[in-house]
Image (cartoon, rainbow, N blue to C red):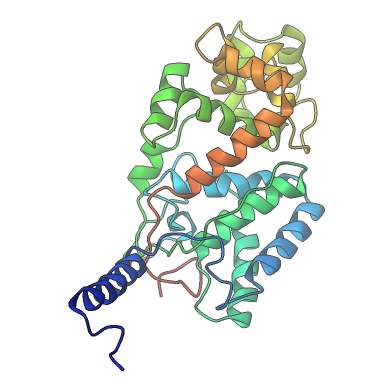
Length: 322
């Protein structure tokens, strides 16, 4: 009996199928079930560790979410933010937006060591950070989303890119729109992602100028903040970004903006008579639409320039290149 591959057309189809398969493997598109066979307990292991860390300190949920953001906005979601300085590599940890500010490194270390015991050299640090961000949001009552997986870890970092690509709390609305547009986000997606400030805390040094010098702030709110943020000193004193419900992932952040109680200058810029006021109003009145848009924007952020296929590596210690 003739082989089904004996005709020229069938041979062509067979080789075309293999070519497409190999091409797809090379580009290694991210997928939600990437570790289904190579490390089936990966997601459960990450979730358990995140739940434990957030139950000990609710703020850690915000810190892990921010870690993912600060990773992805600097040359893509490649865990470059986790690299310590060495003789050969200047990491991103000492960049202005990260120094004495980004937290959660130890939680990632704990997860990585657990996964190295389960499935050595399989799960990337970049994927751990992406999943931990999602699990943190869920742990604090926020929406869930399917994290696409298969990112690989960088072998380099960029202090300069960290200093220039991460949006500063002093940015104007046009500066925010531009900073997010540079990464492919619409103004609406920028407003949704800013809603991450419904959890977490900020240091006095990031909002001092606002509470002493700005007029687009509720006077009693400003006064209450000055008690813990003097005009000089106390740079690292903390205040919640969402004064209403600082450990609940909800839409109170937008309600606060409507009453001029945004903590950072960049927060209040979203509701100061500009083009994003209407979106703040929409999210303030519709929690469901905020949750949906936030989740979709997080998926998009997690897809920023991942290393896939044979690019990068799977670090066995997230702090250093293999």
